[in-house]
Length: 192
Image (cartoon, rainbow, N blue to C red):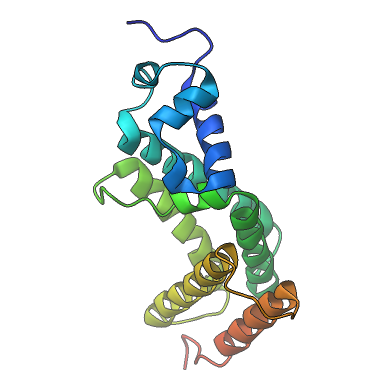
């Protein structure tokens, strides 16, 4: 059966992303997606390998968008300024695309070469920025884990309404990033 005219992987991903961002990733099913696109569910199988295939494609699209967003934030900046801008960009991406962000956490197949490649490219970007802090190899790994925990933790808690107190959330985020950066400056340098 030939693919339906006008139905492409890109149009499917756009519709799936819109659904995920509005209702959450778990609410994206092939039946609901087909209804949104005005097609029958079997038509989607010409472009994606069922729901797992759709989630994988969403993960790839989200990871690419996140990496590109972080790269734009880092361009022309180094050390503290780069970390601040990348952190803000990360949070804004998670806010603008909560469902797509959730899809980036897709890890059902750890042997997925494409997903691992884009994750490694994003990791390399953080390594490049953090290299300016002259950390040992081990301290660099700790710093990357710490920053990822801060960014993902904050984004996830905000998404589920975990910050209920009447204090500005953006100020909290800035304080956390500044505290993280101050901590990085206390780590002994690679040459000590």
